[in-house]
Picture 1 (cartoon, one colour):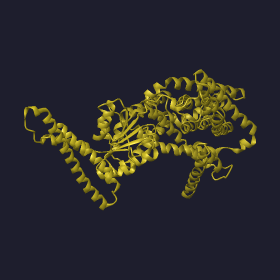
Picture 2: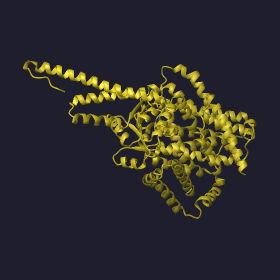
Picture 3: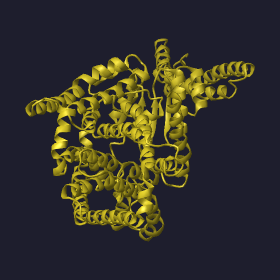
Amino acid sequence: MFSEFFSQAFVYLAAAVLAVPLAKRLGLGSALGYLIAGLMIGPHVLGLVGEEGQDVMHFAEFGVVLMLFLVGLELEPRVLWRMRVPILGLGGSQVVLSALVIGALAFALGLEWQTAVAVGLALSLSSTAIVLQTLNEKGWLNTEAGRGGFSVLLFQDIAVIPILALLPFLALPEFNQQVSDAVSQAVHGDRPGWLQALLVLGVVFGIVVAGRFLTRPVFRWIADTRSREVFIATALALVVGITLLMQYVGLSPALGTFLAGVVLAESEYRHELESNIEPFKGLLLGLFFIAVGASIDFNIITGEPGLVLSLVLMLIVTKFAVLLLLGRIFRLELADNLMFAFMLAQGSEFAFLLFAFATQNRVMDHDLANLLIVVVVLTMMATPLLIIVYERAIRPRFVESVSHPEDEKIDTDDNPVIVAGYGRFGQIVSRLLKAEGIQTTLLDHDAGQIELTGRFGYKVYYGDASRVELLQAAGAGKARLLVIAIDQRQKAVQMVKSAQQHFPALRVLARAYDRSHAYELMEAGADVITRETFGSALIMGEEALKLLGYEDAQAYHVMRTFKHHDEAGLQKLYEVRGDEHAYSLRARQYQEDLKKVLQDDSEEAESHIKAAWKYLQGAEGKDDPQS
């Protein structure tokens, strides 16, 4: 039993490891790499997996649930409000118009109207995974077409939820009673309708209330353990629990997890939740794509190649025409409009889920669902080819009119500075920047500190900023500066190394515990290093000189001279830090040089004071002052 399980696991993982890097090198993207991997190991090619692929697909569908939870986490109310016109206008129009046109074509081809509606709704959606990956890889996300495409995908992701809720009501007449009985037995049991409605409303209300008021103390309690594993387990338990709860009351799990994500979108634990769940979502979605590829029936393609090819072309051409029309209505430039249409003219990964759900609810039969799944997969595989055609044959003709990312207005919500560590050191840095109107993204790993600062109106996100995933979620790819203000020496060094490796354009300012820690940070590649007690110690030394009788200007001059000499000496000592003998010799020389510099400065300052005194008091015959 265990041997068979591990054998199948090895097959899936090995297929992904081999196919995905190759697909990305060919410019096809990871999603298509997973699909190709599934095709190769499927029963119709190598035959390494068989009927158990369907069980794997049901398990991997949880990746779609996790995707919707992450979509909800990204939907802060202010973001939704700012994008309301393209999301509701462009996105809503695309789904409605595409569903109407495709549904009408399906009805004209002889399908029942209920089935035609389901087909139109499922095929109106585009692939979030493929399109977003293409936008990021090509650097098109901040173009007019990229923002329009993102708005459409956002609306489509939200639209999946009401579509899932609608499909059971489209059951064909001969199956209505069967579906009703099945739903009653599996979901409702003996509960009356009014009680079921109350349960649904109560569950939705409970998710909202718990998300607003209970998650913060729970996550703070978990965060106090400083155990990343426990935090990950809590995040997964939250999603799984909501999934089970929604299934119990007969609603789509995607609805509950999406709602929970929206409620938690403004939580200080949002970035940590996102970075912890993202790997599971990515792995499960990859597994989902492999299972979909393995489930493709090649007999359909070989048996009716003309029908399959005709449906693929019909879907791409229909969606392309609808998208082109909407782009014109919403005043996209022709070049951006073409990019917009080429990117979204394919089926969606959500179509697999919708067709499976429609089959379970007797809206369509298995043969039609399998045929449409093959069509959707082929349109997804054709997308990279369409993008290549656009880039090489169409885009060069519109060099003057096509919008470029660098020409777009910078999003003010992309904060230019990330401050990792909001303790006594990081607070001062961020407050100074905020006083100048510079917005910062604040990260800290102390839940108590986060709650305390939240009372004063500061938004601090929970998370371990030494993790690349969290920095990515916090916007390190777009930020200009990373201020490392944590008090953990080795973690700070590791953070500098990670930032240098994964975000080379990010300038790093690091807090050093002492001189030896400063050497480690310099070696790691930090751009600016500040020893945490150095500045305050200099100020105290300056005040001590004043109390000993030094003039204010003289004390300040001594302090500045010492500061410059010490900073220069830090670099010189860093160069020989590995040679103990050379280090000790240079350190002694450094001390002698410092004394000489201060003495020379003192004598020079004394001569200047005497000369000034003689100039001012010489006519009165007064004695020179003694310093």
